[in-house]
Length: 341
Image (cartoon, rainbow, N blue to C red; front, top):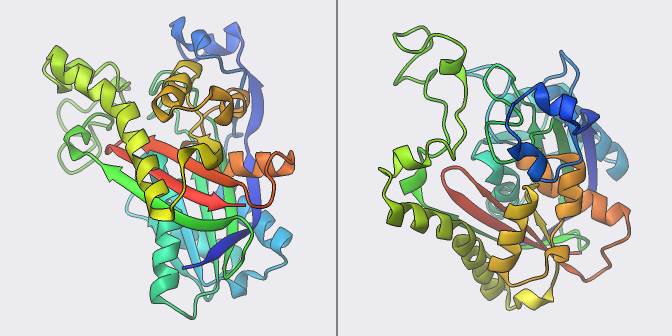
């Protein structure tokens, strides 16, 4: 299956410098400053996830000179929350941009969703030979009621979206393969404990602001692994090990070597975590996009498309270069999509 990226659009929240006073709005912890983030993006009140997604799609369509009615597939990738429960945010985006002839698909597998979306498009193109144009749109909008953007993960969370118009047979920024590893033993590592059918909103023990918050995964690591030091060490080793395994698998499928990959567009993780991944991959840190990460914060599932757009705009990628979109997300999932520019 051959398809490539024709154009990428984006829509970001307002840039905010990470200063002591801003950090104090979210946490009393000093840890945030050690992560190295310089800025993040915060959307204005009333600007929601699908608003950001629609704006990014419209920009991508304009850049590609494609009318929305020519789109055959819209894939919306999100990390967690959209505006409503029991609601199809992908269909809402499809309707708002006027893609009246398009199928809509929602992927909601945490921070891996945007990278996995390329594989979903490859599958739809393979089974629907009449599909020619697809929109991959990844969006993130922090809900402050449920998440603390500086204390619910090991990143500083940002609001924004990126959309890629991809076309069957297009030879630039061409999809080669995607590999995904899932380890469901850690499915409970990152979750919100109330609001689902196990503990609906309003039930005993679900009241109060803390009951509505996503807990920091590091805080629950010992709890979920019974404070077993060996299991905890295994979990930590799994982070980098599975990322390397996913990269090795995508290289094997495409008959390439890790050394041939010019850039790894990894999720916008903190400085230390990025260095750990670089060591696991056996590559210098400057082959990752950590400088971009520290300048913009973590956009959930949208980091990879935004990073790809930035590198292309800066002229850092040349025709023929190999680029790996790498990510990990709760579930746990490790995913890699390999592109040839």
